[in-house]
Length: 381
Image (cartoon, rainbow, N blue to C red):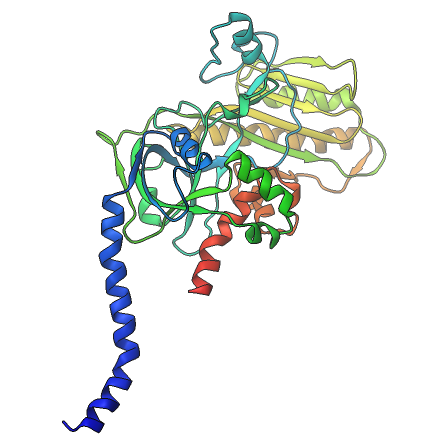
């Protein structure tokens, strides 16, 4: 081979060789980084390390946790601050405190955090939440400070193969990623919000999409009990006439009975004077100032999602039928009969705001940014 031929071949092969060497180097580096991944026993421990700058973006970690396709409610709630007339009106784990008075107060003024299953982000791409491995609930909401932080979690993005062990205690090995200011700005969230999230540690998520990422069950891979709230909300568009509030209350109570609940009724005598219909494990609010209503049910979702979903849908469908019946009896016209604004048993509908331009209106715009992360990364690759 003469010098000219050798020179020509080297020029043609160099780009491919350079890319091959780069790819090989990455494949050699990744297993080393993965083997040296920092180990964390729970999501709170991992979040503490991130907040204190003991861990940086793009580092490998191994986290003991409970991965789940159930994610927290992204919108604000229309729900009473109390669960009923005594502490046992809520199902699921009890709120405990060294101070018995605070324990009782926490129990009667807290709700299981409403959750739903995230719809797919893309082909073979899903969003998860990584909860503590011993979590008995997906979280709480309530009046007392810190109630929403009782069960801390960290979001994750994964491929379908890692969904097998949802709601099972696992060791998850992946890469820490950070939501950037530009990711929030692109969905209309001001940079001031990003700084708030940075200070609270809510800008992090785990990449389990990488080919070297792993999800391995602990012990015998047994799915454990975990509780969350199922939630639906709606409004009535009254085109003509008026509706009797008491008839709507009676319709809600009958919907509870049809699903096996024993209903009670009470009214707030101040502010909006909303009416609450409640039973053990379920509660609904009917606004007397606006045609709004909501329903919240305590549900075990790790083992009994299907049966609890059917029970909840029976209540909501019964109430939608009751609205139609009441309207007919009152000679009123409602233009959105049989229409909930959203229900967390219908992921495509309840999470539709994830694809809207109104991200600044939801409670967790970081969730929107995370869903776009993988697609944006692929486009820039």
